[in-house]
Structures are given as C-alpha cells and as structure tokens.
Image (cartoon, rainbow, N blue to C red; front, side, top):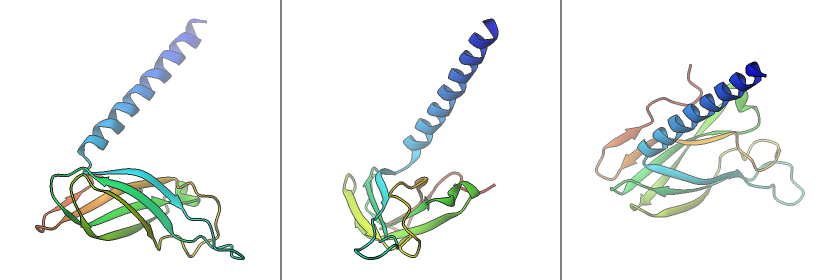
Length: 137
C-alpha cells in the first residue's frame, strides 16, 4: 500500500512539474494558439484541405510573419512541418487563417499532434524565436 501511495505521489509530482514548465514556456511565447486543426476534405476527395489555425498576438508590437511547427498523424516520429502566416497582425488581434499545410495528405481526422509558434517576425525587423524547436534532439 505504501508503494502505491509513493507511486501516485511521484506521478502527481511529475505531472505538476510538466504543467509548470508548460505554463512558463507559454508565458514567454508572444503567440497564443487557440485552435489548430486539419480541414476536412472537399466533397469526393480524401485529401485534407489545409490547416486552420486561430491564434492571438500577445506581443506589444505588430507581427509581420508567424511560423508554426505543426504535427499531424505520424508526428510521434518527429515528423513536423512548418508553415508561415504572413500579414500584419496587431497586438491583441485574433487571427483565423486556413493555410495550405497538409493539403497533400490523406485526411485522418482534424486533430493535430502539435501546433506551436517557433518564430515571429515583427514589422520593425526584430525576430522572436522559440527557446527550443519542437522535434529537435
């Protein structure tokens, strides 16, 4: 019984540490991803119809380009694709765009396995880069 109690306490501690690391990393990211899904195929097609990403610019400056790393289906094998959304994204603005990412694969459901910002270019020329890139060793 004591062994089971220790196991549960250790598991809860690991979950708590992972959650706090995730929250700390999210706090340093100038982009908040609200939704990231692969779009259903057009009628009579089996191919996905792009990737719809909804995000918010949490930064204090206008972003001109936001690059995301997105995993779909076999991302457990470190297979990620990058996509860049280009435009003028004001601070606090919610952006809803469908990008031509994963429109060349057979649709296997809307869920993505990963969707994180990895780079933000600002209108003034400065660049924010994620501290560590997903899928890198």
